[in-house]
Length: 433
Image (tube, rainbow, N blue to C red):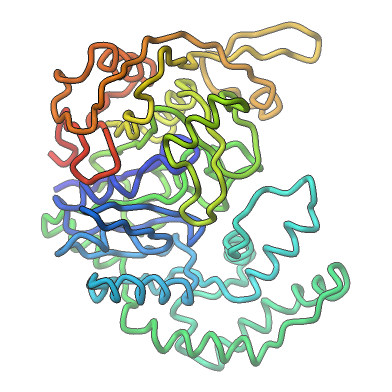
């Protein structure tokens, strides 16, 4: 039975939560494999809307086991807030499993994140200030705290002391802040560990046994391809690997268990935070897309930068992730436009004044930052498409637009989102066969 990876194919906010929820009704486990509470998914079920940040989207699907894998950085306080909020609305969270190997976001990670970003000024990355980057930095520097450390007081105290030794020097001498108390921090983490313990498990073993038993596992990525620390628009990226390869390292499941890789793309593009964005619209068209698509961050509330569909980005995502399918979301947002531009290539001006056409993503980020979109124009449509459930019933110009995006992306489009509700979809082919 399949191991299915579902990732964002652009800069995030593509609608992965809805896609995960739709697929989740056909799977047994939904495993989050990267990021932390800097991600945000909105799942709409009937008249109910659920904003999820750390919990896997499968938490909403009855019978599905939601898993937070070892590649996720976990802020226990945020996790408990989400659990309490969902349980107050009648959502059962007792099935949740949290990897004992996942790294923990401590209070000092949030402090470091915020003071560092302020210190950078105009060179800021545009982080959410939630401690994600510092937690991953500690992981790589081998001074991180993992979930299983929360259950051994002496061991935890030693690790907190080692982690804060350099950080306190930096806070006091560079940022003119007070040092963080080791004992107080340790006691707080131990209290959080007491509540977290019932959810903690060897999730790598559980997921592999599930696949052995013929269960279907959906691996859910936070953020998106263009925010990948290795393959995104570095340095304006997240601190983990939201590309498909991260599903293996972030859950402890081998690559031979993956049978399908699904990328989620909007019918246009958005981005939150700093960094280059070739098709960004800084005019009334961008404001129109933002208003029509309700483009404000689930996690931060920040207005998203909006632009036209970028086929260069989608081709790149198809390549580095090995996409087998694309879920195209928010097609309905484009309703009412007379013409819809699609970026098919970039024009890049070099230092010597010469121009070069790029059909594929420039590796040099200076070239990507200088890239100007080359557009082809497509006729729009006026009909409401939210109630349509067959591709053949879409307006002809809408069908042509989707087919052209599929051709330019080099990957088949298997599912189309036509509105915010759970049933506002057109299934062209099954994603779970």
